[in-house]
Image (cartoon, rainbow, N blue to C red; front, side, top):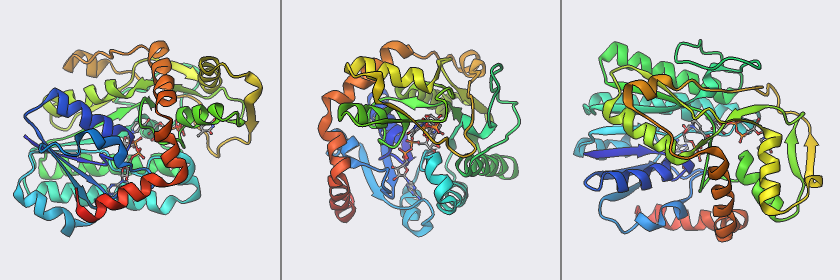
Length: 336
Ligand code: NAD
Ligand code: TDX
């Protein structure tokens, strides 16, 4: 199996590459990543020299760049490359449409032209919009995205569906809730708060801090993607989530507690525009049809994650200093 992973230098993509190389030692992996600010090849240092792994520095919108590798033969694509941060999508929606919608369409076209047998599109629960205090998102919940980010992901989901319906391609879509774990870029809630707490800086909590997210350890998401890649029924959508609802204040207090820092570091700041109140996922379809079970419970997973950031201060420091971009650039030149 020759598997193309897009966005493999990002948070979930790099965890997925580690997961797949362990789980399927016979697979060949090609990581296509343009290395935006969110791409970090430090995440993949341990597989760099492995001859089952290749890095292709390329934009998913750059058909000419991706064509040679497709011509050589690709059996499956797991598509994670995206602009992924809601706050940035409020500031600069254009690139979200470009990467998430246009990029996905170009990738689908390549997959179609070169007869790629499987296309797994990694989407998000945010396409369903927001929930009140009860209820769960199922695969039949209507799409009702509220941010430019989630609208661009919903647009890409519809494009994936359309290619499946129109051209008969074997496509799948996964819609996962919030992930946490190693290698998450420190613009997202958990690594950002850990970084601030480590430095005794204020922890900026949006609004009243009572927005709820359904947290899943990243490796459990990788396991779900692997199951869908191998067993997903043609055209099906699978929700992924571990029923670990926590409000943001609970998450932040756990971080402060684990670091032995005072609650007085919490600073309530202006709310995010259009801030979704609650996400919660019903993943019964994935459990009952593909046998998925999350292995990490939230309470131990979150503490393990906090300890990972504490034991890898150089990872956070290289982002803060910008060193990781120089490291990325050195790999852009030699391609690998
Ligand atoms: P991330 O921002 O950490 O990584 C995104 C990666 O995509 C980066 O390496 C970046 O360089 C690359 N990329 C961006 N634009 C590109 C382009 N035009 N061409 C090639 N590569 C490009 O994101 P993440 O948190 O790892 O999320 C990965 C995917 O999973 C995204 O599609 C996201 O929507 C989805 N998702 C994320 C979460 C979460 O909690 N983080 C939850 C559900 C779904
Ligand atoms: O500084 C902050 N303060 C704060 O209160 C940040 C960065 C976030 N928040 C709040 C906003 C959200 O309610 O924390 C919650 C989580 O925020 P993010 O980490 O930005 O994640 P979210 O907006 O929920 O989206 C994430 O999950 C779904 C990912 O970034 C998406 O890529 C994924 O699709």
